[in-house]
Structures are given as C-alpha cells and as structure tokens.
Length: 107
Image 1 (cartoon, rainbow, N blue to C red):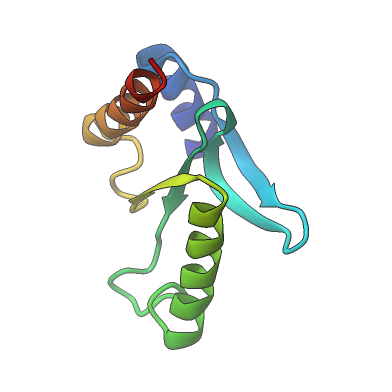
Image 2: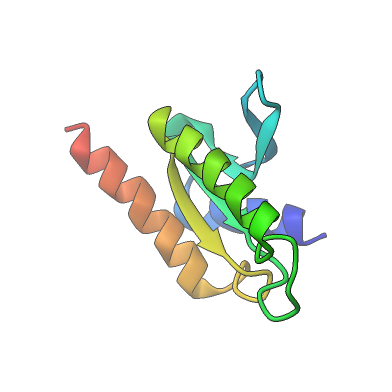
C-alpha cells in the first residue's frame, strides 16, 4: 500500500514517474525499492535501523555497499530513507530537489 501512495505522491508533487522494484543491474539482479529511471535517481528504504535488521548486520551492510557502489559506477544517485520517513514532506522535497538539480546540471 505504501508503495502505491509514494508513487502517486511523487507524480503529484515532484512531477516524475517512479518505478517500484526497479532492476538496475540484470547481471546481479539488483533492484532499487523505488527508482526514477529517467533521472537515474534511486530511493532505498532502509528498514531495521533500531532492531538490528539485515541492513545493519555485517553481511547485509557489506552487500548493500557493493550494490550501492555498483549503482554509483553506473551513474545512479541514491537517496536513503527509513520506512517512517518515506511518505513525509521531507522525503518528497528531497526527491524534488534531486530531480531539479539533475535538470539544472543538464542545461
């Protein structure tokens, strides 16, 4: 449910199409939680920050680093949020600013 709401909010307030579970690297089958492929912006929702979740344990942390570095090499910009902040105005503002920055850098 949150997925659809976030996609709709980004379309309405940021003017961009967001894809869920976007596969950016077919060889490794890595996916972003959300992506704006037209701007090469990825949004990852980092859960488990307070409960020693997968992203905080050593093996998960190292795998995330590998994924994020591979994305950066391919030209992706990554925004990281928590489940609690995904649907906030701060996150939408961050997405809008990332899109705006990318548009200005191409002028």
